[in-house]
Length: 201
Image (cartoon, rainbow, N blue to C red; front, side, top):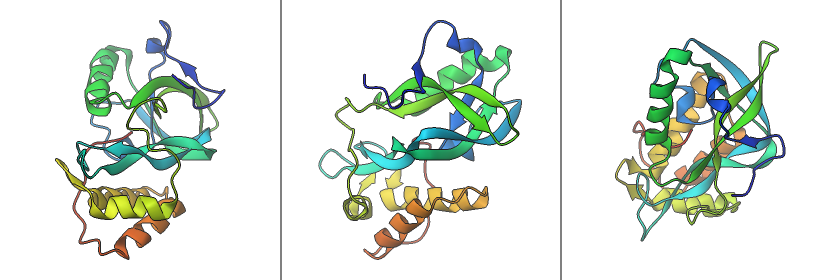
């Protein structure tokens, strides 16, 4: 599997004791697991992007949609969660079920620069560029075209994008690129907001 960044180290036998999880998508506002602490922070060398084809939650094999992953970039803002050692086994199992139904991500540990000055190694779900669902770095116009017309088991792709933009704004982590993409999708006739599912970290 291809590494996303030289700063990222893939899982080994020791990392399960580093009980931090970094969310850059729905995990930021809907973690779904018990945590002792949450701190906003930054992961360098990557950016939030609609770079993974969705053929289940937000699309179909015939008309795929797009969901979030991480692509090369200057950095991504997110939220790091500290998990108690006694909760880690259950939390990790939950995350595997939630984030890896089609194994489109790679589990890795990466340094997160927290807003309080600390740097921690956190579990991050990276995009697996060797996976058939890796969509790559397509232009925003193509992303908007796919998102505007896709629907899967969890609903319309456009609702997932709206949910993302709304929640990023609410937690004080707005993403101008996602806002631009939403405006482009709405220009293609996107409908009213509907709360999205749990796809993507």
